[in-house]
Length: 94
Image (cartoon, rainbow, N blue to C red):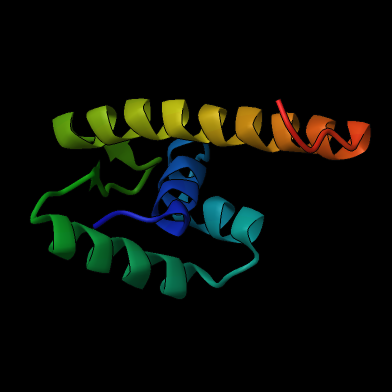
């Protein structure tokens, strides 16, 4: 099972130059992020990122995960925007 935290963490790693930078963006320690990623990969039984001395690079599974995670993140943003518009307009029925 995948949750929003998984998506946020994987996208932070994908968009960063290092796990340290991703951890900083997420306001957690680098070891905590590494542990979380390892746990997620274990749950999925997949490796999402190749870990080298330079930036983590996505595996085939990681690239697919990132693509879908970006779509989901965009949908969540749209939903939040729509709910805010409805709330601001005080719309209660269709």
